[in-house]
Image (cartoon, rainbow, N blue to C red; front, side, top):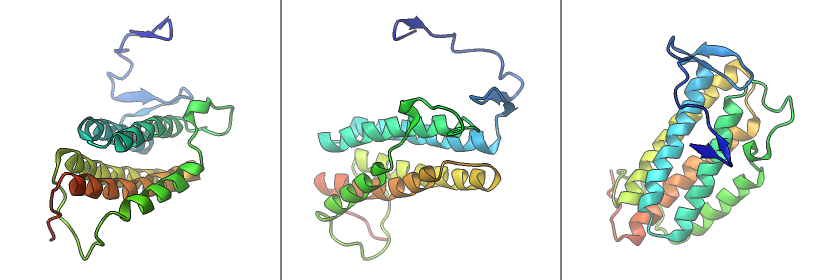
Length: 188
């Protein structure tokens, strides 16, 4: 593989064969360390959004999901660095505070086209909606892992806010995809 004209290291390093992994600061820990669990969930969320994006009918929603995937790479980088913020950081690892208000504006705009919820609904429907519902549940699990980590080690405060608001947005986007696809919301 090549990355901006440079050759990347081989995909396998053999350093994790003993069940350990390395953080950005060089620290080695077991692969089930709470920090690994947190960034692993964020990585899974990004992959689920890639699938949802592949099925999204609305180009605006697909574009929003792509930007969120980029944010999640930044979130993963922050979580993989126990000393994030204590040294100069690469710009692409930052998540702007404005993303929270962007999410809130999107939620408000999309909710305006939806019927108010009268109770719980079953997750599913059109392919993009089903994958967005799945991504929403992965997002909530990632949030739980980040909360667990935050009780043990410093976590950038914006990450918790970001991931919490993101789960709300993903739920709304799933409902929008269903409505636009003519799928009924099945009440529970």
